[in-house]
Amino acid sequence: MSRSLNIRGGRIIDPAAGRDESGDIFIADGIFVSSPVAGAQEIDARGLVVCPGFIDMHVHLREPGQGAKETIETGTKAAAAGGFTSVVAMPNTNPVADHPGIIAWMEERAARFGSVNVFTTGAITVGSQGDQLAPIGAMAQAGIVAVTDDGRCVQNHEVMRRAAEYCGLFGLPILDHCQDASMAGPEAMMHEGYWSTVLGLPGWPRMAEEIIVARNVLLSEATGTPIHCQHLSAAGSVRLLREAQARGVLLSGEVCPHHLALTDEALAGYDTNFKMNPPVREQPDIEALLGGIADGTIGILATDHAPHAVYEKEVEFAAAPFGIVGLETAVGVFCEVLLHRRQVIELPRLVAMLTSNPAKLLKLDRGTLAPGAPGDVTLLDPQREWTVDREVFASKGRNTPFHGWKLRGRAVRTIVGGRAVWELAS
Image (tube, rainbow, N blue to C red; front, side, top):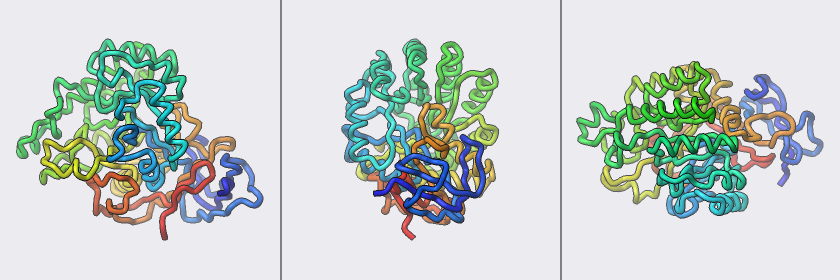
């Protein structure tokens, strides 16, 4: 299959280069070049937005060990169908990705079966148990782009301090799932508030997130290591992040589609497809998240794609695992919420939050259309109307709260290294 393309007539948005104009993009042998390529496949992009390939820096591919939920093959097909050309795999697999051997296995598996680029992360602590640092240096040599105990926040602050100091030696950022387990432990089911009281479900208070965000402010400030707060959900977290950044602290944050589109009232029917960690919260939290996006405090959009087998979610609410799938719905929800309903940001900012911003944080050679960069492209139709149908997902997971939603905005073609890996059927 040819890896050379001439993409003609689209609206080119490349935030890394400050580019927003009509024009053409050229790829020769999988690399962006500055002039047309003789004999290359021609793509008519009129009426479409031509972006650097979207990057999702928070994805659970479930391999090794949890292939009934998802595999690297099915997860990357879902990514391609959602417009993502790169994903960053979380390490809470079975076994946990806490040493170079598992990292090497994942990377070899991705090279053989992946439809898109897969970047790996390593666990902060051995087995993600929170008490003993994993061999971060060895995993850095194996190619990880960050460390995280996602899904199981490190509770020991001294361990986390040592991790921040050690990661600084290797130029690795820390990605942190912010959850104080003494305030929101395994029994917590949903946001603590009116609806948790009505439904009789144990609550997960905002403060359990905000306390760990505050800890990360202090740790990043003391060590100089970048710490990235994953899937922010609480108003206070945005305030802490904003205040820290104003002082020059290397703290960043991401937000997921569900935390912008849903409130805790959605759990009134005890539907386990609305059970996630952190939980969806209240409208004031959504307003704070939108404000953080609008002023640049929150610079990255991600999915926290967390597939589960159907039988795992078809149980009583308390027994169901946390998590929803997101790769195939994220772009539509982000466009719907941020561009169409509220006009929170303009399209170039949304593109930056999905491309150049995560690439900069993780030091990836992606997120741009500049000559010499890998030829990853997302063709986006921000006005495309469509209806979410979980039955046609490429992911093994069907656990979405957005089934049946009508959205506006969708990727229509995904190109990785000059090869079209997915195209929306006409």
